[in-house]
Image 1 (cartoon, rainbow, N blue to C red):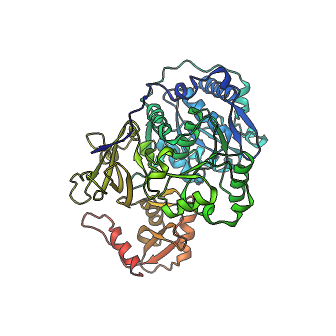
Image 2 (cartoon, one colour):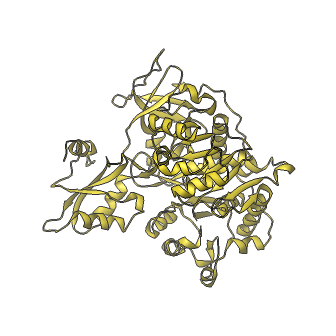
Image 3 (cartoon, rainbow, N blue to C red):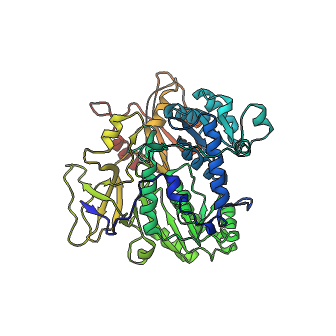
Length: 534
């Protein structure tokens, strides 16, 4: 077992609201908290807290509070911060929904999470209405943040309606250790599951991360990584507020707009995923913008190649960092600290964050891998224990037991090594997830979609490398006897049921799917077949 080389940090037994906003000084109230990167509209800390309280009061007056779960289906706009924290302030729970989800996927998540309400924006309204209908959520509990005549005519309230009511925040007794935020993750395999995170989990992970990241109150953080993803939620939304920094929102990635916002708002700290790093390192458009304000960038959500990271650092003249985590860890367990960037390999994910213990287990024997006296250890599956570990998977005790061992260590499904001085490097993946542009894709979810096609007898999905180096889903399909199926038929069918990032990119027709005696798909055989040109 090994621990963080850094001293433990204090983690208060408080709600997220108290931790982030309870200590706001009078002079902080006039500081800019959030900037709409698209329009330039600013919200101060004082205005933000007032809107959070007003929304909480309005929700409470409508019966939303402890025992209530609200879905939040929204891109990165300033109102996201108001709604997310307003829900928690009311004592309710929130499940964040991927902005790219189809109505079918969103509806399935709402039902699984037991959501009573849905909050969205007008560009998502058609999908949101269909999802709400599927989940049995009535029109008056579907809130459309930016309102509009169409929304009002359909009986949907708006954020403006809620704020105009001017109701005080309710007095609620919130248990910081109860499930409060329920993002969805595929874990190490399988279909998406609700990850139960407490407010204490989120408070802990902000405290652990801020100790190493070095964000300060003079920083402007560009928020293009989605808030519905735990990386954006913890490391951007919440950490920025904890440091009294400025958060600059961007609803979706567009390189020219990303560069314009960075330049015009003098962003100092960029939080990115590897696909954005590729653009920053190589695209000629970079040279047309003044990015001299950028002092640091952190890549997460998928592995970053060290050479690519150094190329970004050289191009922007900034410090490049990498981190590691997963939804089940709130999400951060490892970071390259800003203060140590010059002595830690960028191919690694840095050190274990404070208040955290780790183990490496041999994938074959489950024996513990020892930390060496010098050099790097043998590889082993990384297990993590700390205050950021989830409560469990919603309504899935078996999946929870398979992921968190009796001693409280969470199995990450990733294979790592650790050096004598505590630097961790992720070297392989034990889990089956496909990582595409920072998004998680569960093969089992795509397989379920494929098997719903009447002309498909069996199917399996694995990740393969595309020409641009990204991992993409490839489907192996066994057609029904006599079926006439083409590649494009299968690709189009899946595309009609899933978000764009989950789409199958290639198809191979086979006579049978290799399986174990217990019926488990032998993906390793499919990968070997693909690597041999099959």
